[in-house]
Length: 161
Image (cartoon, rainbow, N blue to C red; front, top):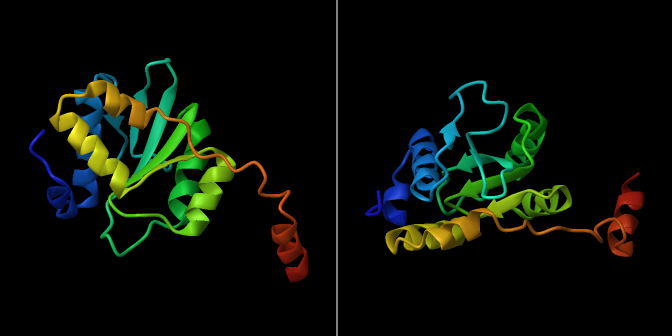
């Protein structure tokens, strides 16, 4: 488990990546972490309870580095929030995110963890720094509050109507 590198992850299939993330959570002390059903998961692949007792759901995306994750992953995990009675949502990928995914995540409070964050998780786990792993997984998402207040954005929206 602690010997797995980002190159090993790059060779994983999607289901294997889900299993790996679940194992990372358990190694970090989230003993209740579990994978949802392979099909019919309602948009969440992994569920766990954080240190504050809040349920979190994760959508995992094991993509090649040249394929950014689109906004559908954010839509999936956000719409699964009520089904799983979760307080927090996140997407973890081995790649990066499209701007549209980052924007949608920002206005909906979805935490996005990308390849860089995944490498930090791997390194922290290898060093047995469980607190750092938890800090990465439990950090606050980037929130976009001023999105609709941006005159340039609202001008573009009104122009297309």
